[in-house]
Figure 1 (cartoon, rainbow, N blue to C red):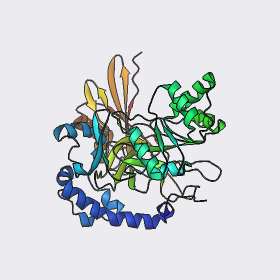
Figure 2 (cartoon, one colour; figure 1 turned 60 degrees about the vertical axis):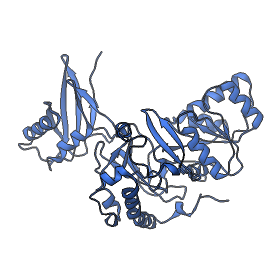
Figure 3 (tube, rainbow, N blue to C red; figure 1 turned 90 degrees about the horizontal axis):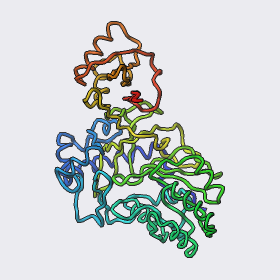
Figure 4 (cartoon, rainbow, N blue to C red; figure 1 turned 90 degrees about the vertical axis):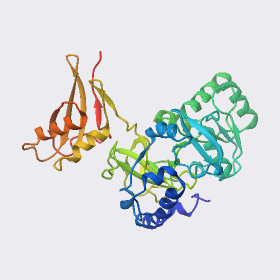
Length: 413
């Protein structure tokens, strides 16, 4: 039995790092030569010098949250696409943000995640992601067909018609959100519809809760999840061991993933929660140090399934914690700026509370040195945010490992 999608999944980590690093100069040069946005952003970068993760970490970050304005200034893709002639579709995500789909088979690399979830050539896939405007349906359709799986484009809604199609066509596999699979199962029980042909599933786009995983397994539909976006394609995916157990998500072979302090490009320590940054080797739409706005953390050691790439815990929330205080926006990168101004600070969290109807900011800082530091940090906070706040010190390791840089603790009750 073939256990892995290809040999890339079982490379020695040192070999993977070396081969990806060797591909970086070509990626950087291609982006500079063919994508106007990168010609500007990387104007002072010498591509042959970018030959390691450390060198990559020094490049500027492009934030997904900035794409709306960037695309409005330079439609339709903000200058990040290299050639419109290389696309088969243009799709739209909320924002709106426009994403291209390349003409290559498995453009979003979803075949790898489908294979890890047990999908095999010949499986008829019941695809319940939306096909209208949004990329979801097309992303999974493309990956399934590249794997050799025919697809029924069910889309969303119309539950009774979906059940009729499942009973008639007898698909073996489901892709869609976990909540909609639960709805289909519940409606099938109510109507007495036969959907017993479904034997496997891959879900995404929303939180996959333990009760849902248990329910699907009990119904004979072991279902796994993947983490993907319309900009980047597949980022990471669950890969069960021989017992069907999973531990985190394995990072896709087609990307380089970094975890950084939210609002910055600064790497966090292994295991610390931070924002997911991804670099793709996609020639049509190269995205370099692309900040997803999602939180996650790395897991130590190799996956029990035998795949050797780095692992992450999966989606752990949103990194964009921008908060309005006294009528002014305060951003995570401003908190990071305050920390960078003081070598004695290891980490900080800005807590916003409400006292007697007024907003109060308190910057809680991890440090071992507090002598004469409070006034200096308070002044930096005032200069950077244009707002006054209190400063409190705690010992290193005291702040929660949850990726939060700004905590809005105001009670409006």
